[in-house]
Length: 466
Image (cartoon, rainbow, N blue to C red; front, side, top):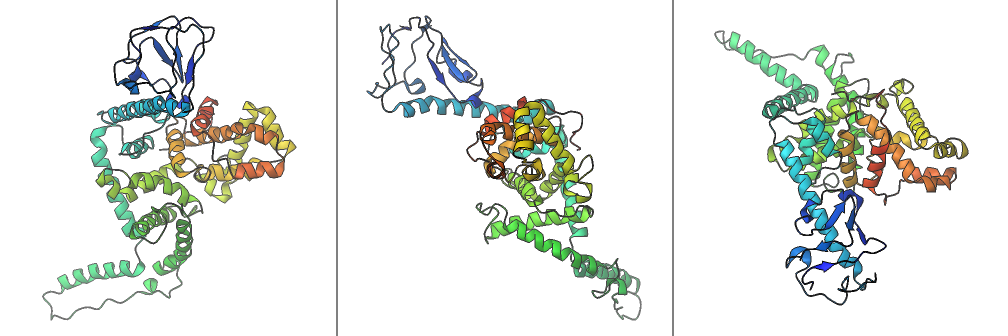
């Protein structure tokens, strides 16, 4: 065990122990334990010639006898030799895990504090959310609702706004998703009740309601409810097929359990309602992937009331996310300023500004145009390029960008190209196309997002419409 004060002699090189970059500078928990040691950014630096105070027993795992396999520095040794045993990885992992725990707890505390304020500071919330929202609890669901403008910044208005929005969704479902026979039956009941009330003093005969030509199932009139219902059937079948293919490896969405069927039914209602309210766009394959991310986060909220209303909340947030890129789903607008081709062109320009060599290699040498890989990246908000957990982390940054979702999305797409630059420069058309259509799974998400943050935003075009 280390006894007394240990004075480290000046050395030519500092002893450094490197921790992951994403730990940042949130390591204040160690300051009360280790004095004379400075933790700066991602590097633990020891200034030589300074004295270290004794470490209390049992602090950070040091309250035990030293084993032969431990990493240690001998007392009174002037040279720089450090003995490293065979279990150095296991020994090094302990402080890293401790630091991770400290960072997560501090970040969670920051979020809980911000979300408990009477008036939410959205700028500050955006800033801390861009570094990642802790998993579990209600933090991510509540933060996303705030970032999307679904919840007002005034905490006192949350209950009122949520109640109104959820009732509005229920009314829309009843009006637009009701089977025509149920609608006709309800209308007849209301009409019969009124007539019977009027004739209550008559001879007791009941009036039979006739089905009008307009409401008959075989009528070909454009205003006929049944014709609209039959036209919707094909879309319903497409949505059902897509939902069955949504994250087939996750029981929340897949399988025939009552739980997964309930989730798919709720998502189908959202997509159908969106299609009926937006006849120019309707449903486009891939919307299910975007919705799945939102619906999962809201459904797994630990607040039971919020989880029970995940369908309504997901609908309004889904609409808000698509409002920033709705033209991407309309083929007639592909060549417009807000269309997908224009957006792909901006991605190419962004790469050209930040890495002309890579841009020239893709555009002219291998002729791998953004249309071959960027179309799916952009329209589906990267939901098909990374694992489900990584998508949550990426969306934390997407939704917290003050310049809008699409601005940060293009910067992340550009960063994805920069992070595999070496492979792209050495590849031909086939190799590069395969690489970008099946993006590497081992990419460091935190590093990727940091590269994206360092790319200058284009503030001339994008602004999240809320």
